[in-house]
Length: 119
Image (cartoon, rainbow, N blue to C red; front, side):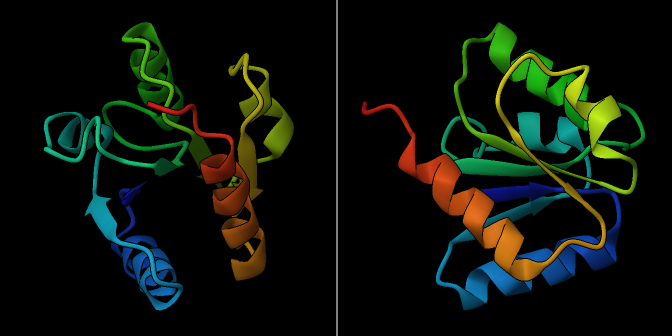
């Protein structure tokens, strides 16, 4: 399952539709806190998260997951430049600027899922 977290309903709708058309199971959330309190937390193969959201940002979500030693791959989507996002994250992650190309997102997901540690 791919979890998509974004406070923009249109982005959630478009991203989930794209991913479902590619054969992925998708869960959507309008906030990082909603995701953290959901059954999908701990079951997602990959997260796609907006960076700027009310309440908890995508970067804060990433930090919270890593603090719990949750290695789930995270793909960030942002309306801002990539470099400022990367300076807050000490890990190799995919960062896509909005609007992003569907092919770029799918490539990021495929890379993220292919490097998942075995359980």
